[in-house]
Amino acid sequence: EDQVTQSPEALRLQEGESSSLNCSYTVSGLRGLFWYRQDPGKGPEFLFTLYSAGEEKEKERLKATLTKKESFLHITAPKPEDSATYLCAVQAKGYQKVTFGTGTKLQVIP
Amino acid sequence: DTAVSQTPKYLVTQMGNDKSIKCEQNLGHDTMYWYKQDSKKFLKIMFSYNNKELIINETVPNRFSPKSPDKAHLNLHINSLELGDSAVYFCASSQRGVGVSTDTQYFGPGTRLTVL
Image (cartoon, rainbow over all chains, first blue to last red; front, top):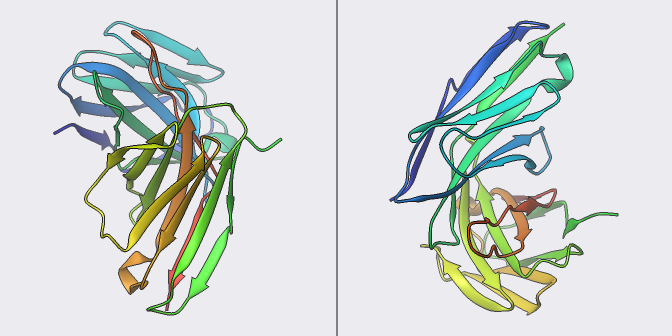
């Protein structure tokens, strides 16, 4: 069965203090790995899809990278508005189902 | 323009009642999903429909019954509500990928169900 483990569970950063969130996964043939952002009381908001090891994608202060066993979401010089829960998910080849991790709750303090 | 919408946003009801949650998407997608998010924020797939056909049916009590009248709508009916059904329910939609592409899912705002 597909598994996704995210760490840390919670992360508190000073504004401008760069860091990384980790997503370790086990899947029988990766079709895609997804990163989502979820604000309190809202639905997950799509950020990135990564398809193969070595791939990188960037959006503003966020950069997602992928290896054969894990993905990192790097946050450069975060701002308070980056505070949210970040969710990682995987989809196996040949399957429609997407398996989510439990997320990393990020708090950026001014 | 709301891409994936759900009604109601909040639902408070008594144990034993029957309730429905509605979902609509205007993205032109052919696949829709229902997820349950528990108090620990874990998102778990419940059902998925592709062009009105059920393609994912996880281990969910048969008190939960999805219905897809067309590919833009997916409703969730829950019979005999129990305390443990209290959670946030999210609807999502995607366009089924072809070849190496994937099915990026877009989520609705959620329905917070509280069973008293």
